Image (tube, rainbow, N blue to C red; front, side, top):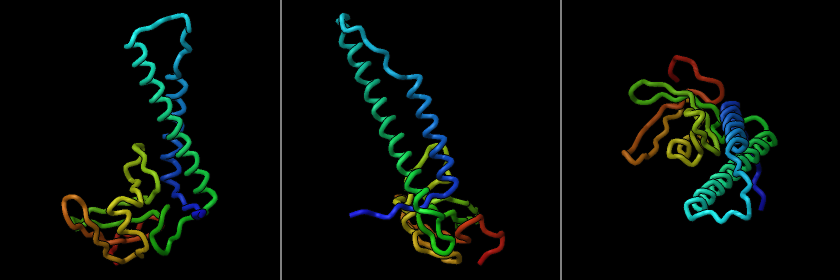
Length: 160
C-alpha cells in the first residue's frame, strides 16, 4: 500500500539540506580509521570503535531519511494554501498576542525551530484548518488555543 508523498515547505527543505550537509561533513571528518588487523587492542579501544560505528550508522540513517524526505517533497509539489497540511506555512496568534510563522513538516530539524512536525500536538491540531479558525490542542501542560491567521505566506497584521 503506497502512500502519496507529502509536500515540503521551503523552510523545511532549507533546514533539512543544511542538516544533511552538516551530517555529510561530520561523516567525512569522523570516518573510522582502518585498524591494523595485527593489533590486539584493548576493550576500551573496542568500545570506542563500537561507539564510532554506532554514530556513523546513525549519521547514515539520518542522511538517508533526509534524502528520501527531500525527494518525496519534490515529487509532491507545492503545499496547499487553502487548508493546513504537511508542508504548509502558517501564521498563528497565541492568546498572549504573540505571533509565530511556523512550517508543518514530517521531519523536525534542530537547525530550524520554526519547523513543527505533523505528529506534534499543535501540528496535529492544525491539520485541515483554514485561515480564521481557532484551533484547540492539548500539551503536557494542558489545553491551549491558537488563532490561525494565514495558510501560505506570513499573514497580515490585522485579525480575521
